[in-house]
Length: 358
Image 1 (cartoon, one colour):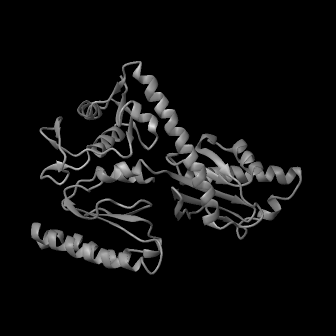
Image 2 (tube, helix red, strand yellow):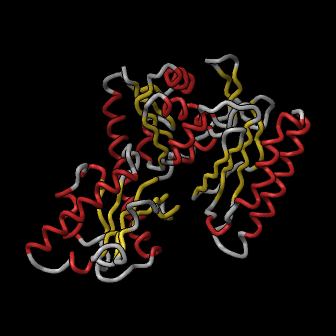
Image 3 (tube, helix red, strand yellow):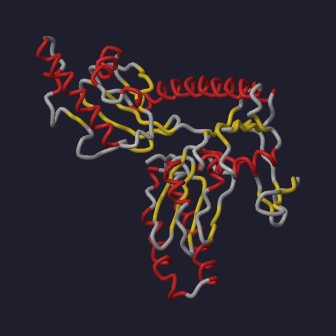
């Protein structure tokens, strides 16, 4: 499940109390030991606030989960930040490759996830299929980092459970067996990603990537390949550098395509640039494509459910610190597309623009 899907699922959960703990972390030792200290401090803060607002007997299970958190934090897996969601029925960690602008503890009837929507849409989640003669591994990646290796009944394929060297021998018989093997790998990938929610980048030779596509049940899930030495294992950081360069180019092309789509929609009267109107259209499910310049943010104070006034001070009592995150959330939950971009072409239209469905 992608991070975006996880957050959409978390958004639907209503429990009191719902505890969100979010803070920046460190990838390497010894700095990642500081993460454990920070978590303990945040756990203490959360406990104190819960005990002030709730009867201890009613929240005993929540307090027990909080006490377990320091033991559950595997600091060697930390990236740039971590978000922890905890309630009576929920106990989830989401690690991310971007630093958070706001750290702390949130306690409410639902989880604090909307501020992350803006950040998530600046990033790319995908699968990496590492396909070599020495083995087949499947990784979940975010930007330039591997989040985890997927290990299940199918993956990894290794020389211990398959005679891979025999498969890659020359000859028609071996060629047919290799096609069958790649078809098995493809089906295994689809089982690991049943909703096809994550695209897959393949690390392999061009020849073997082409062969995989010929036997794939759903070739559209594969977005391309980067080459590697087929005969020997490659260090993860080496092929992830290539993967990230590929993804950045793909993202740039995608954003250019959607900017062109937005510019074409202007002539059809489908584009809104007024911030208030954009918010209301997003609420009504009219948002098909939202593009926001990544430097744009705007604090507001709501007058009622559908209108707000623009303010300068994001710390003002009752303020929403950035309405673009709320708008993005509304578009996403109503099946629209959202992109944050640094490409200057968007500024010809405005710092935030919405293409409507009708």
